[in-house]
Amino acid sequence: MNMIEITDLHKAFGGQPVLRGVQLAVARGQMLVVLGRSGSGKSVLLKCLVGLIAPDRGSIKIDGEEVVGLPAGRLNALRRRIGYVFQNAALYDSMTVEENLAFHLDRQAALPAAERRRIVLEKLRFVGMAEAWNKYPAELSGGMQKRVGLARALVLSPEIVLYDEPITGLDPMTAAEIDELAIRLNRETGVTSIAITHSLESARRTADVIAVLSEGRIVASGTFRELRDCAHPFVQQYFAHALTG
Amino acid sequence: MKRFFENIARFILFCGRFFGCLWRTREDWRETLRQMYEIGAKSILLVGVAGLAIGMVLAMQTSSTLARFGGQSLLPSMIAVAVLREIGPMITALVVAGRVGAGIGAELGAMRVTEQIDAMEVAALDPFRYLVATRLLATVLMLPLLTVYANALALFGGFLAMRVEESISLKLYFDSAIRFLDFRTVLPALAKTAVFGFLIGAIATFLGYHTSGGTHGVGRSAMLAVVLASLLIIVADVILVKLTLIFFG
Image (cartoon, rainbow over all chains, first blue to last red; front, side, top):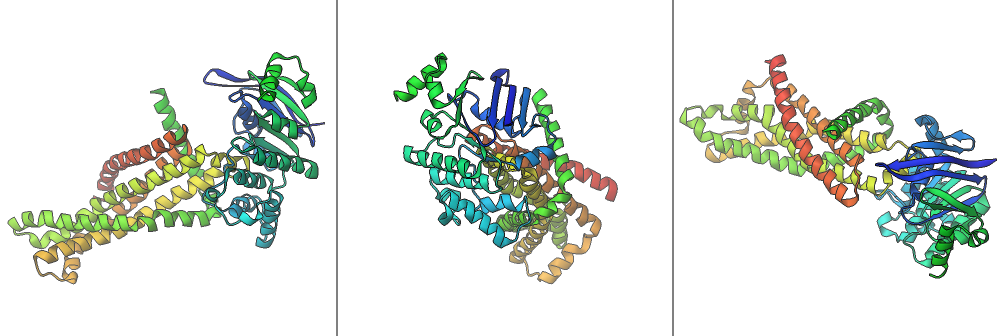
């Protein structure tokens, strides 16, 4: 059974269509990467999944539960099962790294302080940021902020992790490290993941399946090798541009 | 025009949502206290200086006029009535609207454009309760306290200005100042500062929470928070004074 199923999803802003009938299915434990050009609606798709943006039409099912039109209480219950890694980390800048993670824990479960700290440090260790527990986001580099953003997304041990352009703005080495973390997380915990990116290299490294979004539709999907040999003109063009640099 | 009325409707719903979650805000008492400190304690200097200056200026400007009619002994009472009924609440509200309104509008606006509010939402937290309700409640609670403080300093400022001109003891000044005061004079004026606090908090959080358009939007939210809050305070004051006169004479 698929963990996530998106059927005929439409969304327009001010009469300008962004998503025009997206069809997508993600199997449990799978790492799916949605590839597309900037402004192709990738972030909108991800935000529709967690109910931050309401689609105009279509269906999104997560573990069999329809997300579109879900009442606030049940939507929040569903959101607790999802970790969301933001493009620019979106760390709370008035809080330290530890407080960023503890804040999410505190408000979901009444835990003793020692247990809360153990969980926070465990997640920070996973992303290699345990030493930065007392730093403020402004004191961290972009790559470090992304790591902390990932740790915060994991603090409630989600079943699904969504990555919004996880490597945008990072140098190639840091980008590869973030990709490695996503792969490790997927393998070690079996979470279902969707990452959106415009980087073919990142998609090649991390994805079980790649879906290509163009003009509001998924125009092709498959493994990296399958897509490399795909006849769709946009996919060919995308690969040609990316592989020739 | 349609957009204007849409925004008014959204603002009313926003305020309704605040009252709806007010009881649950007790779970965020720590954040509410922090906001009370940010709004109250950090405004003390500005509000204090404004209060002291107003009292001094009021005494200096009116003493010669009163002296011309032989009514200089009424100066403390005049200062007390003017400050406690009108000038103290109004000056405090306008000063807080400038300092706190801009601060809240910019802070929440920046959190919105950097997706920090979205991050709370997708984590199934309640950003409205944590960010909006706590700030709004803190503004409502702190404005009356700041007004009492500004009033006290304005009265003291009046005393200092009088003391330069003539030899008057502090005891005599305050005895004279409170001669025409009663609870019907003081309490409605103090109560209206809670309304001013609500207007400042509601407008600033509303604009900040719904910021769009990047850093330009943040600046716009901060600026509009000050302008609209100041404007509404002045309009509300006219209505509240009229209501006070109807109900308390």
